[in-house]
Length: 171
Image (cartoon, rainbow, N blue to C red; front, side):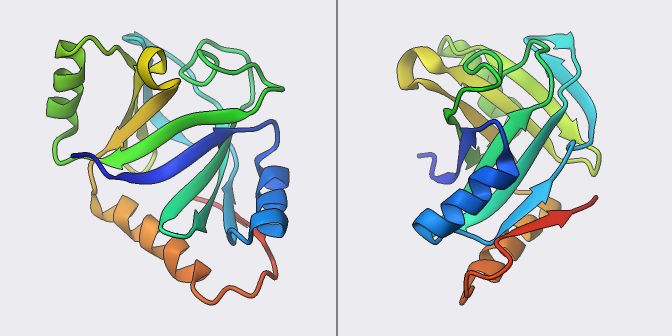
């Protein structure tokens, strides 16, 4: 059984959405990564460019991501939302084997909308579950770099006093 580790919402401005979430819901702090560097990206099997920014914070047991895409290129984001729209885009899960998980979803009729690798080598994929769930599924293996990032965000939320709710990070 998959256990969600993150809820990701499409927004026009991740920094503003993070600030609003901190003020309205007490979530955070958020860590803003602008123009997330990717070393590889396939959109529905073809090479693609995916220029996006995200803010990551903690909401109880789950990480929350606010994501935006900086252009109108075809993508797993644009499959659901135009630039000015907002809503739940994906739910993320750790899986023991990304390739095997993608094959299982494919064999059950779910398309892989995107496969990509971050500049620091984290592979991830978006599975199109729009027809059944109304959003994408993001899958990735719990590699050390990703686990460390999740632990860092979680640790920073423990005892957070609400100050400095949006913090820019660089890779």
